[in-house]
Image (cartoon, rainbow, N blue to C red):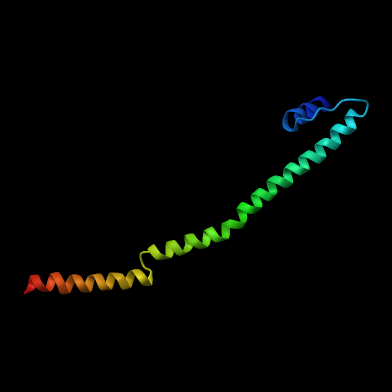
Length: 94
């Protein structure tokens, strides 16, 4: 496990550990660098998550605009039907 941890630190963080306190240094390096990496990832994820409520509100507004039975759509639909009747149907009947 010690060798694997040292290999991980060397590959991931470019850290080489050796000497008489290598075991203690390996454990401390793992704590330090993994903690920093986790905090960094958490901060990046937090920034992305903070945008989510705004995105959801935008999506809700867009959905409401295009929803079939929305008030705006019904008003547009009534105007369209009225103009279709006045401009086309009545002319054909006459």
